[in-house]
Length: 310
Image (cartoon, rainbow, N blue to C red; front, side, top):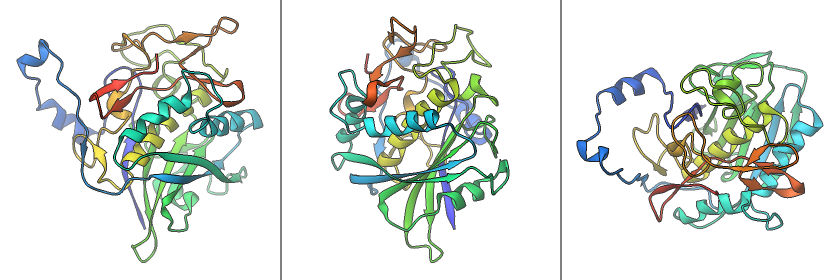
């Protein structure tokens, strides 16, 4: 048994595409006139639930065909979250914002990696397939199982209302809980939705795409979505942590700041970021092994604002 609590939605701009019930609810809520003069603080309320803090093992389940280089980009990103080796602005300094949420630091380390290259469940997956792939041993406060699907794998809801998911898988007895994440490679299916700003958006302002920092639009897009989901998982793992809005479609640590990557961002423009002089690639964070990444803004509990690295 298990349940899916939340999704990472599309990074087209500073607005989010949501499931229909949320759209209808949002349509009935207007801004106050005062908001036109002064932007109101963004507040993610803490709902008194458990967070994932301390040493957390991240297990990776690769479903489908990924090259060794593609896998190394994802692994290097996770290693970078708690590394002190990279020069600032760094992935670690971005992740350090999660320490400001109740309970201290979340130290993520890569655990086991499982390779499912034979497409044993086919190339069209449902949420139940994702939870089956995630597996789990019930160690819910110390483990996150991450399912990564290849570019030729279709997943229920992928490219329509989600780029990835985080939720919780329960044991058969319904007591043990374990967090899991799914992220899909959108390279051939919907890069304009799930790999923006590295691809021209399908909707909204048509600004030129940025050059992906690791030379792979699909994988660099996956890093953005994985970063969003990891932050959401450690700060709201069981649907009673930090979030704003309804529990069925919450705005979380990073999804509350969608579309913002640097200062001066606005709908359709990711903001001012750094550019590699040699490759022309855009980034805002240094990682391990000389990697560069583009990471979205994260909500800062101290300032109640979306905090960017640059």
